[in-house]
Every structure is written in C-alpha cells, then in structure tokens.
Image (cartoon, rainbow, N blue to C red; front, side, top):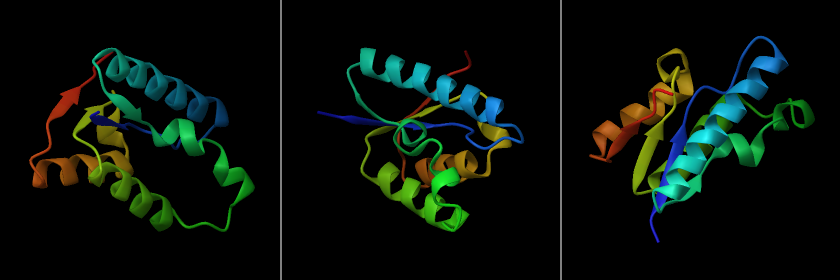
Length: 106
C-alpha cells in the first residue's frame, strides 16, 4: 500500500477559516484515496489540538508533519499552499527528495 501526504494551509486568523482549511484537506484526502493511496492528512488527525495543547510549539508540529511526509510515497498539494509556511516547507522537502507532487487546484 502506498501513502499520500496531504499538504495545505491549516492556520488562519479565524477558527471558521481553519475549519474551511480542514475541509479542503479532507476533500483532497478523498481524491488521494480514490486514486488508490492511503491518505496521511495531519489536518484530520490533529485539527483543533492547538486549543487543547497551546503550550506545544509550532516547531513541534512542523517537525512532526515532516516526519509523516518522509514516510509517504507522494504529496498532494492543496490550493493556497503558497501562503502556508508549513506547506512551503513540506513542498520543499518533497522537491529535495524527488517525491512525486500532485497539485490540487480545486
């Protein structure tokens, strides 16, 4: 079984916008699943955790997502990724490691 990492913006000024980012990532995860991959989507696994664990640093989350990405076979990039620090780091990791990239513009 192959794994597909779902990269896209998470953070936003308003919680409703964070929720929209989570829904966008979920839609892309479903596309990856329909493409035959097991999706790895941090948005769906830890969405909202920042409210329960505010002491956890941004670096912890970024390092964790890069670890997850390193286990995957392909990366799906959600729309708006260029505005996301985490997504840009994940994209750069994928480029540097010759990982196939699938851009989702919808």
